[in-house]
Every structure is written in C-alpha cells, then in structure tokens.
Length: 167
Image (cartoon, rainbow, N blue to C red; front, side, top):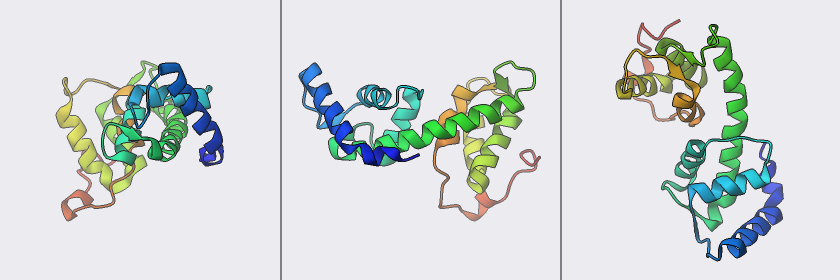
C-alpha cells in the first residue's frame, strides 16, 4: 500500500512541474492541489476531495500541507483510498435493496465493525449532527468517518456499547 515512499523523486518532479505550470511557490499546498497531485501519481485511484482534506487534517493538524509533509499526506490518502475499496464492497452488502443508501443502524454497525469501541462516540456524534435524523445514509456521508483512524483515547463511558447499536 505505502508504495509512495519509494516514489520520492516522482513526487518532487510532480511538485516542480506543478510549480512551473502554475507559477506559484508551493510551501503550503491546498486540498485541491494535493488532490490533483495524487491523481497524477495514482490515475486509477479515485478519492474524494473530502478524503484528501481529512488526510491533510490527520497528518498536518490544519487545512494546508507543508511541502515537507506531502509524502506523509500522500501515504494517508493512499491508505484511505485502499480502505474505501473494501468499504464500498461492505456497504453494497448492507444495501440489499440497491438504493445506494443504508439505514442509520447499519451505518453505526459499519462504524463499529471498523472502529470497535471508539465507534460508539462517533456514531452518537454522527446521528446527532444529521440534518434529517432517521433518513437513510449514503456512503459519501460516512466515508470520512469510516476512514478516520480509530481514537486511541477512550474514556470509560465510551467503552459501553448502547443496546441500539448491538447487532
């Protein structure tokens, strides 16, 4: 998966080409720019702009990527891209009616399958933030949540799985 680390020269070349084409200095790289760079490196992989933004936030702790962090961010985007391939299949298995959506309960089940104990809080936060509670959930709506790394710091209250999430 993390083949990108062996492509440092190619990445430097792409960054240089991007700088020459756009006439800018890339000390800080935006989500859109990194999205273009990733697709130049991996033309067959599709990854959403939301996933790229989440990867930058995960690695850089802000919404811009420093040039020195590009390789780490590209590896995180790669991880998310490959995970999404598996998640698309899992999602389709839950979507028996082939509507492109699943129930909220199934979404929480999927979160729990991926994240274990840390999914409880994520699921509660997700459900409480939805504009239309009770409506069906698309993969695009939960893709970033599913691909985020599991939280390592769990409080005692997060460890207990609510009965409505147990399946």
